[in-house]
Amino acid sequence: MYTVKTPWFVKLLYPKLLWNKARGGKRIFVTFDDGPIPIVTPFVLNILKKHDAKATFFCIGDNIKKHPELFEEVKNGGHAIGNHTFNHLKGWVTDDRKYLDNFLQCDQMVHSNLFRPPYGRVKRSQIRLLRKAKPELQIVMWDVLSGDFDQQLSPGDCLKNVLKYTRPGSIIVFHDSLKAFDRLEYVLPRAMEEWAGRGYSFDVLG
Image (cartoon, rainbow, N blue to C red; front, side, top):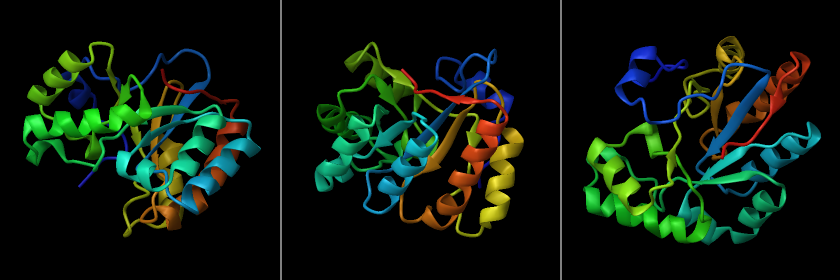
C-alpha cells in the first residue's frame, strides 16, 4: 500500500528528512531509484537530454558494480548521484549495523551526500547511525510517488497521478528499473512535456 502524495503528518514525524524543496519559483526535482539498468537507464537519459533536464539518480551499489559504464554515463550527463544502499535493503527489517555497512559499501562507489532509503523505510536508530558516520548526509524522501513500480497501475493512471500532485518544489520519484519500465516508458516523456509546458525547470538535489 502506498500514497502518491505524501501525507503532511508523515512529514511531521520525520521533520529532519527532506520531503520537498522551497515552494517558490517553478523548479521541480525529478528523481530515479534503483538503477543503473540496461535499456531503462539509457531511455531515461535520452528523455532528460531531449528536455535539457537534469535529475537525481539514487543508485544501488550492486547495479553500479554490474553496469559501471551506465553509471559513468549518468554522471557524465551532469546528473546528481545518490546512495540507495548496495543491496536495496528494507530498513525496517534489517539489523542496524548491517544497514549501515551496506550504506557504506555503496558510499565507496557513489561518494555522495544524498541518501534515499529503499522503500522509504528506515528506522530512527538507523538514521542516527548514518548521520554519525556521515554528518553531512542529507536523507531524501519525496512528496510525489509515481507508483511506476505498481504493475496493477495503468500507465495512464500513473501519468494522471504524477501530474495531479506535482507543484513547485516537488521531489518526484520514478524508478529506472525493469519492473517499472512499462509505466515509465509511457509516463516520463509525457510528464516532461507537460511540466515543460507549465513552465517548470528541472533541477538536481544537493
